[in-house]
Structures are given as C-alpha cells and as structure tokens.
Length: 337
Length: 253
Ligand SMILES: Nc1ncnc2c1ncn2[C@@H]1O[C@H](COP(=O)(O)OP(=O)(O)OP(=O)(O)O)[C@@H](O)[C@H]1O
Ligand SMILES: [Mg+2]
Image (cartoon, rainbow over all chains, first blue to last red; front, side):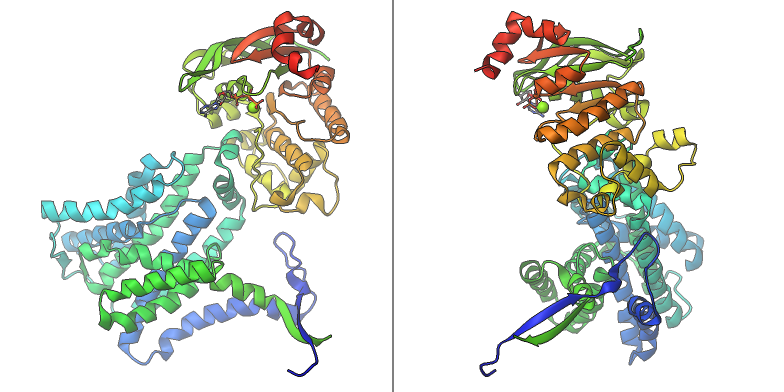
C-alpha cells in the first residue's frame, strides 16, 4: 500500500430524518432509496417461485415460508414483548392436528380448515400458556419447551388421533402455485402487519412491558391481558403454519411437534438479527435451503444449526439484517490523509 | 392550600414480613384530600415496602388499605392505578428503547385515560410533550425526543412523575423523586409538586431530603424498623425524642 496512509471514512445518509408517519424526503432519489429495499423484498419473494428449477425446489420454498413465518413470530414475541418462546412446535402441532382432525372428520376443504385451525389453535395455545403469563423470567420459556414434548408422549400413550401413525389422506391444495403463493403471501402480510403493529401505540405498550412491566402495571394497564394477546398473535401464526403443512403433506402426525419447528426459527432469527422482523425472514431464506442440501447427512443437520447459531451469537450478535441496514444507511469511502 | 375533610387514603394496621424481617409492622395512616404527607425514616425502614403494600405490588400479611372507602387490599396493581392511586418507582427504569415522550404513550393507552378522555385525546404526541413540559422538561426539539435510556437522572425522575400524571390520578405517591438531584434541579421540582397540590391532588412523598420535604409537606410520618414512631406537623415530629434517636442522630453529626 506504499507510504501513503489511507483511512476509511463513513458518513450517515441524511434522509434518515424521520418524523412520525412521514418521511422528510426531498426528491425521487431519496424516495427510491427508501422504497427500493421494500420493493426488492416484495418482488423478490413473488418472483422466486417462478425461477425455481424444479417442483422439488418449489416445495423447499414452501417450507422456507413456514420457517420464515415461525421465525418472524418468534422475533415479535421475544424482542417486542420479552417472552422467549422455545416451543414453536407447540403451535405448528396444534394447528396441524386441528386442521387434520377437521378435514378427516368433516371433509372440509383447506380454505376452511386453515382459518379455523389458525384462530382456534391460537386460542387453545394461548389458554395453555395463560397460567405462566403473570410470571416473570424464564418460566414462559421453560413451559413452552415442555408442552410439545409432553403432548407427543400423551398422544403416543393414549394412541388417539392416529397415534404414532398420524392421520393421513387429508384434503390437499389444488396445485403447487396455490401452495407456494399462499405461504409467501402470508409471509409478506404478516411481516408488514407486525412491523406496523409494533410501531403503533399498541406495540409501544408491548415494548413497554418488555422494558419494565412494573411501570406498565403502575400505569393502570393489565399486563397479562396484553401478553395474552401477543401470545395469541404468535400462536395463531404458528398454527397457520401447522395447518398449512398438514394440507401440504395431506397428512398430520407427531413430527409436526418436532424440535425442528422450535429450533430452526430461533436459529434463523439469531442469524438474521433479533428485533428486525425482516432479519428472521432472511435467516430462514438462508437456513432452509441449506438444511435441504444437508438432508443427506441426517440428524447431523442439527449440529450444523447449532454451529451456525453459536458462531452468530459469538461473532455477529447483531445479526445480518442490522448489519445490512447500517451499511445501507452509510456511505463508505477511502480517504487519503 | 385547601385540605378537605374527606379521608382519601386510609391504611389500617398493615404489616408485611420478609423472611423474618418485619419490613412494615402495624402501620396506619389517614390522608385527607389535597394533603401532602411526607414519609421519612432511615434506610431500610420500610418506606418503599409500605408504598408497595398500598399500590398492590406486594400483598400485606395483615391489615387493610382503603381509597375513598373502597378496599384496595387484594386488588392487582393495575386495578389500583386504574382507580387513581399511582406511584413512582425509586429505581428508575424507563422504557429504554423508546424516546422520552413516547414513554408516556403507554399510560395514555390505559383504560383510565381512555375513559376520562372519552376516546378524544387528540394528537397523543402533543399530549405527551405537554405532560413533559408540565413536569419541567424544556419544550425544545431535543430533550423530549432523546432515547429514554440516555436521559440524565434529573429528567428520568421527571419522566417517572409524568408517567403518573398522565393518568390524571387522585393520589400520587412519589418514592424519592428528589434524591440524586442537585439543589438547582430540586428548586425547579418543588413548584411542580406545589402546583399539583393546588390542582387538588393528594400526594405522598418519601424523601431523605428533609429540608425540601418540610417546605412541602403538611404532615410527616416517621418509620423506623417498619414501625410508625411519629406523625404530625414537621416541627413537632422533629422534637420527638424517638425520632431524634432513630433518624436525626445520624443527620446532625
Ligand atoms: N422483596 C423483598 N424481599 C425481601 N426483603 C425485602 C423486600 N423488599 C424489601 N425488603 C426488606 O424490607 C426492609 C425494608 O425495605 P424498604 O425498601 O421498604 O426500605 P426503605 O425505607 O424504602 O429504604 P430506602 O430508604 O433505602 O429506600 C429492608 O430490610 C429490605 O431488605
Ligand atoms: Mg425505598
């Protein structure tokens, strides 16, 4: 590099000036600058299924969507409400069984079973978790781990609802396009809806509960009620995923309570960046295809997730998205000194 | 100053034991409408615990608390705040990730405010800024918009007070709002409290800063080892032998 010294200089872009709901923008360049990432995200997700080489990879997109939804829901609950849910599998399992049982007993189509499973499952999961909501600390995390494990044992022991075999020959989606666009559309809707929610007054109360629930109580607000609502939102998203999967496979069984549905979304969230909501989507976009590629090595996949999780926690705890956002808002150039 | 005849807040023989330590022992008091009562006592004498008992954050082992004749004992904290009895916390923990003024959105979302404003609160951000101004924030384009975790202590105390006032309460309980503040900062806080009293609020102030407290308080209650050892007008209380021993002994050296 010779004798000449150089220094990296960073500048923050000026357009970050943001008032309440209005961007203080002055020209089309700045509008582009702000809109571009959103547009790229929406178009990217919608075009993705069209460029997939095979049906197999389109199916991978479907499970990517599922993990993205679970990860976004995890992020919402963990970062904005302060409830760390280590048992996303509870939600997928409950959602899958409700839709599966409905479909096998009444023959309803997915267009009905999925919404019923989403709302009904959300309610059931919220009721299951209600007893630990007034408690603070790790209780919520512990209880959420226990539920999916316990339910699997109970279903096996009682041998009801298909036992270890599960329920098969359920109604499925008409074609692959419905499958893939339903889940990707849902990802976009949930993502933007939650982003909106956490910045509304309602979201501020949730964030207040995370920062200091005592002060929220002292402000005359029923903290448990708000937490229950947030858990319902998360559980409903998870139940949607479960119901969707049962319709995708035409089958529902104990593996919908599997650890994968709890761990992979968390890994995706840590990788993508906690608290960004987009980050978990990004993490899922990376981890799901990766895990497909690694399918050949069986359970060793879990080891790889763990390594990814650990290295992000140690080396880049802020996650990819926070890093990308920071870079996007900065100019960087070398300057001679 | 107009102190009404009506007893607004009443405690009857409340007690609380923490693992053998009698944090509060058989304490009773009556608080009239519009009155400012000071609670003083050495460190660990049970002042904060008494407040926790009144506001529902800790359940008393025995005894009862009444607000305008309605029993508060056993109600959860948010119900008590909803009735109009609010408190500040001794340990400041604002909603750290939000700007200062946004901290006040939370109480503004409470059922009590929704009820009293009839859903017509107007622009909440402006209401927040007004509230901050009421407790002595400068109305400029800078301080109210700072992230709460970066505010200096003096502002945090004011923010905490503003959080209570956002509810338009009837009783405000201040747990050491002056401690850690400079004389100049306290001097700007005193008129704030005085104005609250003028507006008819009933106030309890826990303080270690006696001189400032005595300027404000209509009466003073002294706690020591969880027991009430004296109550009355500031000058009289300070004459009391037990109080001198328990409290002033350390102060006057
Ligand atoms: N949650 C708790 N668990 C156990 N002991 C407690 C608890 N809260 C308070 N105590 C004990 O009760 C006693 C009274 O404490 P308290 O905080 O009410 O005192 P204080 O008068 O507010 O003191 P300070 O002036 O330092 O604020 C202390 O001995 C304290 O250790
Ligand atoms: Mg105290």
